[in-house]
Image (cartoon, one colour):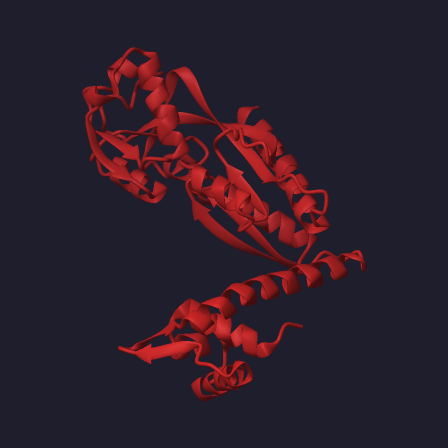
Length: 304
């Protein structure tokens, strides 16, 4: 529905290249160049500076880009809302999720939702919980799946469940046979910590602080932004880590890792967040309801 020239312009600006924009749009480069030329003739000004193997926006181009994003976004929203009148959900759902939720929960959630609503296309962004919270507040995401309890007054939060955190170690590690471990037992070992801003890192820090252990006394071997890297390094014996019991289950079953309960037990919340908005689309509401119910059901099964 949106002007094709605006779609092409937006792609070139986003990719910084006519060639990469053509590939993304499944067009030839001459066709992309022609569309941009038409748009520049319409506005009677250059929209891109070309040089050094990259194209950049002129001041006029930056203005057009700001409007193009709004127009394309509204067009997408309009198409989604009109399709709702036919009782068939469709359109793009902008979803953000923490790395831990993406690593275990998300595939099951998307598979179940797509079975019910095959015409919906989830567009997924992955980051730490604070980043996802911020992007939902800025309207860059429709729904966020996070591991912190938000206190933002503009957000609608739904508590979907909780996930137990466990110590993870290699099978031959001295703590692998323990029934449970206390914080003071872990201080002597190299710790594979999550990156600053990560929700699980904050919970782990609280776990040690609650036991009277200063954070500067921790033997941090590395700060890692990837859960898969944490699991791999722990399995190779580079250190211990504290991670989601759900996210490590396959590695534990395969014998690559051992999960040991913490004492006292430690849990991370699983939260669904979306903007408080009386004009929220049925697609967003339906997805939020679905994932809240499904996560709750999965958590009940895990704890049974």
